Length: 213
Image (cartoon, rainbow, N blue to C red):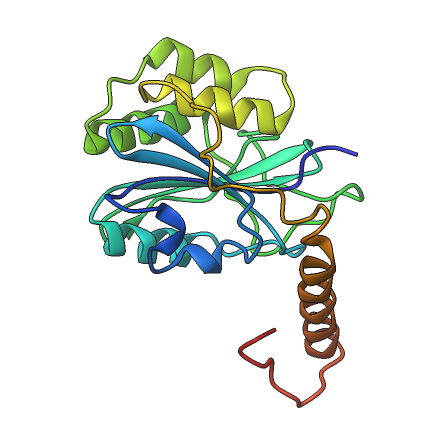
């Protein structure tokens, strides 16, 4: 089984997970990694469905006042990438194949659907994000990541480095594995509650999702 989750990059004077909009990316914040100069990388999860990344990116960017980069990774096969600078968000791009729309194993379009974009447009958009963030990106390294053949999660981490962060540090001491004992009973209940709410929504049931779900 590959890597599934959401990787979020942002800058904040406090823990990024405390900023408005972070919970929209996922409710299981697993790890926080310092990137230098206040930049942080958060690995979160809990959502199995495809996220509409633009609004969470915009909310987090407005909360921190700094650019945001996010990627939702599916079983290490593909990643949806999105950036935000202030209230402006970029197009959602599929890392699996930047020349085509992102699809599932049966070839169906995955909602909300990534836009098929030329490699040059993807690279220039990422470099523009890096410039807005004040980071010294390596254009050749960014292009190599975008066009390279590697696992989607490895590509996302490589992209973060290519965009100019000082380095991806070890997880902060306050980070712990919420899916492992002794925390697993609580995290499992949260997962079951979320799946129940999603099941009701897909079945068209009228009962709304509770705030704790």
